[in-house]
Image (cartoon, rainbow, N blue to C red):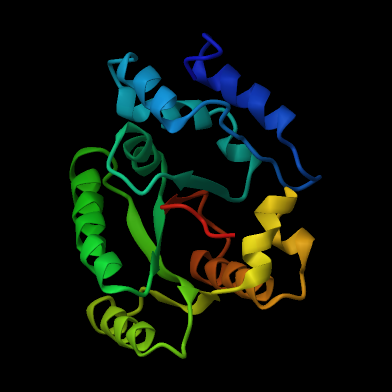
Length: 212
């Protein structure tokens, strides 16, 4: 936002046109580092936690679904995502350190609901880099089912070489190898998300980096 030196709504309109990737899909990509955007937001008080929400207001009605990919850290970028979103997807690896970090994310979500966005809710937990052959993966999955009943997506994104290769070729996983296990898992996830949303909600925020 700071790089263009103009209002946030005009910034997003410009980036949406530049990043259009298909007749029914648009992409708004950042041009600077996360640190640069964080500094720009800190300089834009008041309502600095609401800048993204304000920017999306102009284009919200143009999309059935808006996905926000936020960094896995509690900073102004993430707070802007939480303020703008109606539902949250939390991706996590099935490891105990990730399980410990999950409690912090849940507390962050509660604080965002109390101070920034009363309507925000968790849509689901997504297991990534999942390998059912590992006992640890099975144990962590069982704990997620126990402590977050109804929130764990049935779909799990597996460890998959084709998913790891796709970014090095500058291609989305579905375009690189649609028949791979990883790509099929993401397609199954889309179906599951659509069922949960019933195609009525407008925004979903993703906390963490999508592994693709």
